[in-house]
Image (cartoon, rainbow, N blue to C red; front, top):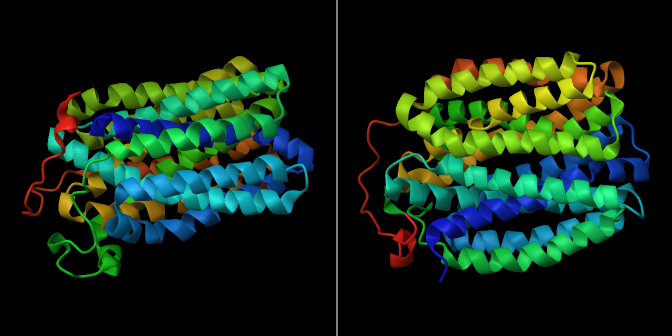
Length: 399
């Protein structure tokens, strides 16, 4: 049986593979459908609408069915969604929008469920490890992006690329999550005091963490959706070079997330995320005002490092109290994913007028907001007193 810790890594990795496999082919889908930047932004909005639909429900789903079943079912739904996009883009915009809605719904619930399970492991270990799970996600995105770049260079069709990815990833995820341990919290547990899910939407700290995560989700999501498009359109680079710039961004995020726990354990959450926000802002400025592809790659590198820890640290902060992890992670993720609702059309609108690269400067304003809100990430004095439930014996095998 696969160990719990490795099962969580695999859940993060395969979600990253799925998301970047689609993102790597956005320029080709855009060209096939003949979309302008603003039109592309509206099409990508379907993903955010799907996520916003599922995220408020995710805490209930995890509480009722457990993170294991939730991730497994959403992996199957994501496979259906990407297949719809892979085939539908040859027909028109409507099937792509429908597929992206399902894609967003599946990724939203999957994201909350695997973060809840990751928080269980982090609480048991007693040190920062959530960023490394998110590094696993980034490893998946890098792998997906590089495979996408290779597929573009070799002339592999979008349909073939995405369908093969689905056939490999979906059964792998369903198998991997069988190693998940029991969730330490759910909406019906005694630790919630029977107060109901809506109560968690009134907690000031949870809401502030949610807005912080929103800022970093916008920073990360804008890079994922638009870096390759900006390098192709504004820097005049080839499609394969644009995809490689996207891969550089993802690789930088992966490095930041892998080594980030060392910094977090030594200096604490607040100083680290503030420093990274400054680095990310510097990368955005280089990317927006550069004129040579080298500047685009350098900006993408700094941008990726700066964006690396915000989302996972926010999820860890939301899960500080294991008895209330599922509903709070659901609330924080719901707020954070609003970035994906407004981000694509905003950048697309700006891209039509000042170019995509300059339009991405809007991300900088939210990075400033993240610095102002970062004090909300300070760990809670002590978690609620709830009986500790040990992980299955296999969970400790790879510590």
